[in-house]
Length: 368
Ligand SMILES: [Zn+2]
Image (cartoon, rainbow, N blue to C red; front, side, top):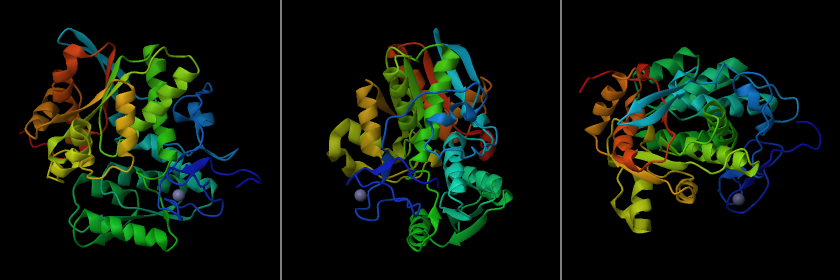
């Protein structure tokens, strides 16, 4: 790290600054997560892809952005029930999901800090993205995964050369194992915790406004941890502060009813938590029982007059099929937005934007 430079992060609970000498995923004193200490600035430079926004990222001066060509995803407009709807094709990022925006920034930070090895515990899109960018950076990647995890995402993680540490038992066992390893000194490149991720996600908002020439009226996106929603919110706030957009879009998060804690709390306050379950769902990527920044997600939704929509399990394959019939091949997690869009469509201000977050190649097509 350059002399005098420090990571611009602060503990969300106790306000402590981020240490210079290590890369903790949470505050050693109070256990809180770190957030960006300062508001983001929109300061594009005339180059393509994520590099365009590198001056907005919390990276040391002179740090290289280790890119795989992420960002600059297509925005495709179609007419749906008489309204213009734009699909932001995040599934066309290098590893097939929106996660690459955040991972490029996080792994660049780790490389700048000369990290040689890092760990993760996602068997899904975050794990695949981590494995790819770690390979790009020459960082040894270890991914803690439930013994039972299989399928295209696991194969993708292994293909990038990550070492898979199989953990017996449910997903939560792998999460505990990775935290133990982090506490023993490993760098935990967590998509949920690390604030670099949010800065990368903000580029989604920057690009969208550049492509549309204005802010969307409403933005729908699937939410689990809500990193894309929160990052986009930071991006829109930066644009509004700099008077480049007139107003913030309504942010509408979509969850699967089988595991919908944000929806429950939004509907019923803390009492809603009583009826939240970690049920099985085709939307595995948003099956998050305790979103780390859940309060911030709900605050962003309320501040923009948005909301949280919930979809039934049977609507997910139907949504996937409907999107495919329009030319968009996405995974089931991304397909939750279809029914939510149709339900909300009559009341949404245009232009309406939908985030298509993950590729259809990442899961089997069961038709259903
Ligand atoms: Zn703290």
